[in-house]
Structure formats: structure tokens, C-alpha cells
Picture 1: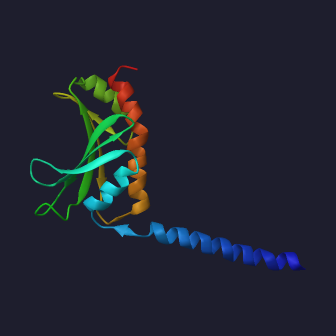
Picture 2: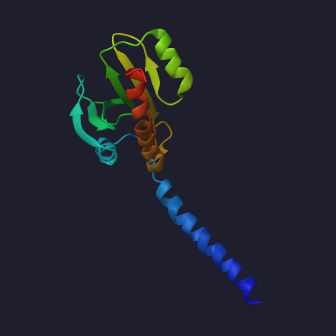
Picture 3: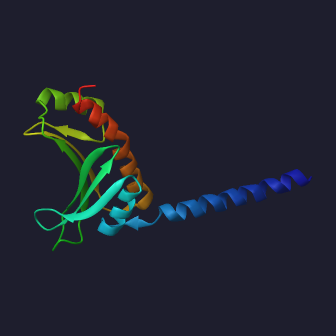
Amino acid sequence: MRAPLSIPFIGLALAGAVSAASAEDVEMLQQPDPAAILEIAKGFGSARMDRDDNGDPMIAGRIEGVKYLIYFYGCEDHANCKSLQFSTGYTDPLSADQANAWNEKYRWVKAYAGDGSNFKMDVSFAGGITRANLEQQFANWDAMAGNIKDFVNGK
């Protein structure tokens, strides 16, 4: 008879563990705080805070040997921004066919043809996102960095 009593207690313990983990994920970020973004970026490689040509926050970093920038968009007086964009580019341009080939194969990071090859990934904070989701966006960018490097080098 003791075995049936332990099952509810195990269930309660597991529910408590799930609730504790979920509480961290519930922290909703309504806008990209540059200091918090920089902290996360440093967990994936080197990163430093900078400013773009408009004076808005910008982070310059390196993941898997690939230099990248994080631009902050929709800012009001260089603060209270609404979204982010991860971006990396190379001086060798991509043709429209090359960009399309990349875009057919990969979903999250988009390639653009032009004066140079450009790869971008947007992150919107509309409605808020969890810190865990934001960290996953960095993990996505990190996972794609090697693919970008290989694609540009023709591998």
C-alpha cells in the first residue's frame, strides 16, 4: 500500500520543479535592454557595446570566428528600442541566386544580395519575449555562424 502514496508525492515534487523552471522563463522582456543583451552575447563569445551611426546602441561581437553586429531598432532618443537585428556581412557580394539558395535552405537567418553578402536575423520584442527565448535566439545565431562562414567560402 505504500507505493501508491509515493506516486502523488513524486508528482507534486515534479510539478514543483517544473513550476520553478517555468518561473524563470516567465520573466518577460518588453524591450531589448542593451546591458542584458550584452551580458547574453558575452556568454556566446566576445562582445562589446558600441553605438551605430544614429547614436543608437549596437553590440559588436564574434561567434565561432564570425564577426557580427546587433543593431537596436525602433529606439526613442537612443533608448526604449523595440527590436534587434543580428547582422554579419562580407565584402564579396552574393548574387541573387546565391542568396535565394541560402534562403531556401535556412529558415532563421536570411541572406541578402547587394554590395556585399549580408546575413540577418530579426528579433522582435512586440508583446514581450522571455529571457530563455532571447538566449535561444543567440543559440540559433551561434549555430548558424559556421554555416554562414562555409557558405561564403564556397563549402
